[in-house]
Length: 316
Ligand code: PEP
Ligand code: MG
Image (tube, rainbow, N blue to C red; front, side, top):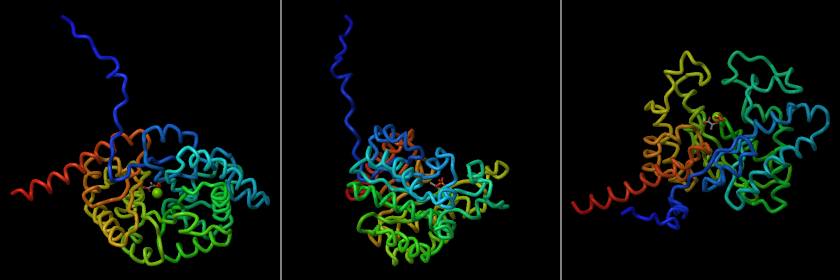
């Protein structure tokens, strides 16, 4: 006799998996925030700005040159709002603009972008933003306005950080527009250069709430392998011992100082790396939306394994 299936049991959604290590989503397109939220992500560990600018069709510096800073602030606010509103009160780490010169040339106003032999080693991230502080100011103004509207879940993340001096200047610029780092917003850096990983304690001394490993760039800079060059793609691996040492060092120093350690590069979606990160005590792992569920499972298994390994060793 055929068994009758209990449909009520089938239709019940599975209980969400709880992990102590937070699992977050990377968001590049604000329109995709709802889909990212539906994964059960604990927040957004990386909100990229580049797509917001590409869809505007206008180079951010053109707004400034044309005296239309307000328009730039408005575009940024509308885009960031889509994400912080969906995720509220879960944290969203907004990464300030990180556009290599070769990627924004097609935009209105992008024809003036300088030509660089090595855009990846060039004028991008915080080093560029400190040269064009009006854009950074517009970003901070947008966040300040959202904060005034009650969005207390925004954090600011500084890309391509190289020296603590940049962090000091970025914080000063935030203060200039009335946005108070560590009070109104969490303020942190991306660890994407070997330099930042090797002197993370100096950034910690200046004051950061979190550090997020950008392993896509950290790998290319540690191994001197252009991440966009197919000829050397075989040389690109996050599992190189030198990259792993920098990752380990960053997490250890952050955890020792009570600074939130995190990762938002692709390495955080690779199961055996995730296992290592959990063993090292990383606080959060941020992955692309389609990988969040798998990462959550890997994190859960890694946490359980740590507990059982400890328990079984004690009984020996
Ligand atoms: C990274 O470098 O690891 C990162 C997450 O930033 P992006 O991929 O946008 O450079
Ligand atoms: Mg990067």
